[in-house]
Length: 558
Image (cartoon, rainbow, N blue to C red; front, side, top):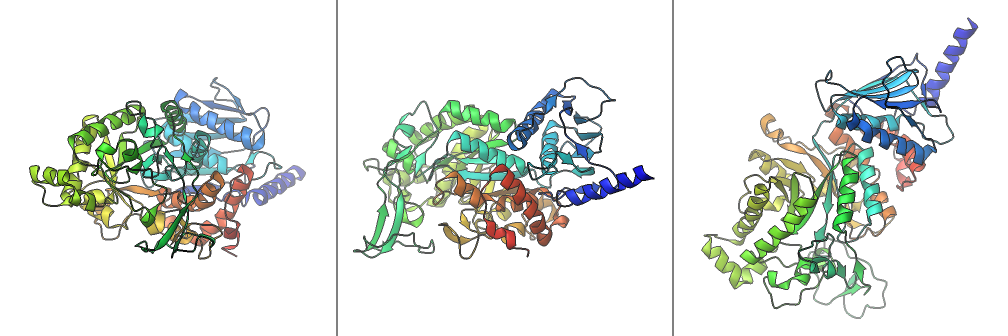
C-alpha cells in the first residue's frame, strides 16, 4: 500500500511538472497523455537507435540539440535489441502506410518514433524536442504520451531576403534550424535583387565583383529641400510617388557580400540533413539593377551607367528591366545552368514581379522583339520572357516558380504561382490547374509591423500575430477539385529594415509559430486563445535556445 501511494504521488508530481510541457506547436493531429504512467528519463545510460541509416540525420540532430541546450551527450547504438530498455528507437517501417505520418510513443521504459519514411521520423524528432524540459535545471524527463501526426500541406515554406541585407553562412544555417524546429520543409533563398547579387557565378564573375556591392544604404527621406539637419526617417510606404523636392539620404558606406559556390553547397548539404529543400531565386526581368551594374549591355539602355541600388521600395527610381534579347536569354541560361547544377531542388524561382513596362515601351529593341513575335503589348512580352526561361528550365528537368505577376499575358505552361498581391493570383492559378503557394502580403510578410506601435523600424504595414494565425490558405471560392492545387503557404521576410540576426529573430518569432500551425495542423484544431497559451511555453524554449522575440506577446492572453 505504501509503494502504491508513492507511485500515485510521483505520477501526480509528474503531471504537475509537465502540465505546461504538452504545449506543442504546431498542434499534432492526435495526442494522448498517459496520466497513469511515469515519464521517460534520459540519463547517462540512455541510448538512441535506428534500424535505418537514413534516420541517422535525425539522431545527430537530436544529439546536437541535447548537447547545445542541456550539455548532455547522448549515446548511440547500432545494435538492435528488442529487450532493451532506456532506449530511444527511431524505426522506419512499412507498417505505417502514409509516408508523411509519424507515431511517437513514450513510456517510462522507452521512446519510439515510427514511420514509413525517414522524413517523417525527423518531424517526430521535432515533437520530441518540444517534450523536453524548458529549463536546464530540470531533469531530462519526457512525459508519457502517444502521438499520431502528419502535415496538412505539402509545401510549408519560409523566405529570407539576403539582397537588401546580407547574412553570413553561419546565420543562414541557424535560420534553417529555426525552420526545421517548426516542421517547415522549404527555404526560399532570395539571392538576387536590385540591391545586391549574392551568389557566385563562375562564368560571369562581375556579378559578384561589381553586383554584390553597393555604395550606401538608405537612411531616410524627407519631402523638402533644406531638411538635411533633421533627423532622418523612412516615410510610410503609402507614399507612392516620391515628391520632386524630396531629399533622399544614404549613409555612403560600401556594403555587400556574397556566397561562394562552395559555401552554397555547404548550406544545401546542411539543409538536406534537416529535410529542407532550398529554392534559389534569381530575379528576372525586373529587380535586376545589380546584374545591370555588372553587365549594362543587357539593359534597355545599354549606354547607361547602371548602379547597384542604394534605396528600396518606391524610393528606388531606377528599377529597370532586362532587355528580352537573345543575348540576355543566353546570359540567363548560363547563370541558371550554374544555379541548377548547384541546387538539387526540382524548383527554381525566377521572380517575375514588379517589372515596370515603361522601359520596354521606350526601347526600340523591345518593340522590334514584340513585333517579330506577334506580341500585342508589354504584358505579353513579360509572358514571352518567362516562357522562354521556363522552356530552358524544363529542359533541365526542373520547374519554375514565379510571383503572381507571371500570370500577366498568359501563364507559362508548367509554372507554379506564388501569390503575394493578395489571393487573386493563387486563385487564378488553381483554376488553371497550376500549383499555387499562398503568401498574401498583408498576412504573410513578416517584415511588416507586429504591433500598431512597433518597438523598432519596420515596413509601414501591419501583419499582427492574430492575422497570421487566422489566415486560411485555401480560398473559400475554390471548388474541392481546384483547392487541391493550393500546394501550401509561405512566410516572407524582406530585409530593408532588418540589418542583423537579432532583428531577424524578433520579426520571425512568434509569427513563424503561427505559420507552422496553419500549414501543419488540421484546420479544425485551429484555436487562437489556446495557441497563445501554448506560445508561453514556446517562449521558455526560446529562452533556453537564446532566441530573440518580443516580450509584448507574453501578456496577449492575460
